[in-house]
Image 1 (spheres, rainbow, N blue to C red):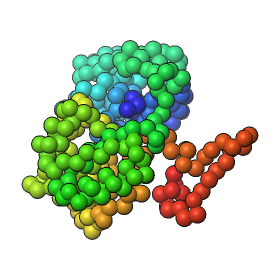
Image 2 (image 1 turned 45 degrees about the horizontal axis):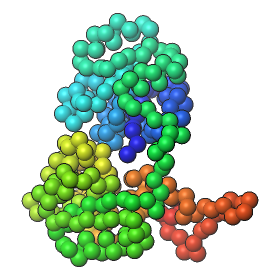
Image 3 (image 1 turned 90 degrees about the vertical axis):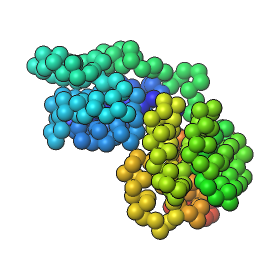
Image 4 (image 1 turned 45 degrees about the vertical axis):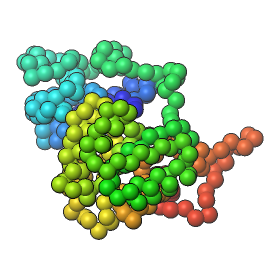
Length: 289
């Protein structure tokens, strides 16, 4: 999976500078304009590093940093503080809470790249092996569902369209943990109706493991179980797919969650022309894509 950088700053200009600085690297850049938004994005996305401004409205950088370091799941994320020259001494005091480095504003892109590269492994977009996965590449799915017929329906539906997509089904939380210990899935689908609130327990266990901390996890729910779906979203599930199973919905959301290149579905070069091909019948998901 691509590395994720979260920049939390109330200045849109600074966020644009950060995005521009990393434009040539194989990264996903996420943004937040204050500490409240920053915590929400950090909890949901699990960034590999956070660039955190000190002075912000709603919740400033100090309060956000304090909350980050008090959360067992978020505490390991390295933080680089951004501060104006006048706040330099204050940052030195903040350092005791737990930061990896700091940068004084205004700063040059080269300084930002240098500081971040010391903490995470920056890979240029042109580097060998960073090609974006496509729909034709191999992808491994884990489906946790105690009804074999549902697993078969998902497996048959996905692998018929994409033969290189592999679907492994298990019925219990224990089997899921054992499977993930041996192989890291590209995506996990968990039935929200597992007995004894097993879906929530399994989700928390997966998020506490280094190997699956950032793996996309979908909740599978009956379409009418609104409360169940809302609880899963609040817990942090990547998205919800519903029963009766809609294979196109799962495939579209999976491609987005795994950051797959889907352009070949609609675009192709023919001689000297770039052609756009749309099916006669196209869903709303397809139009959005």
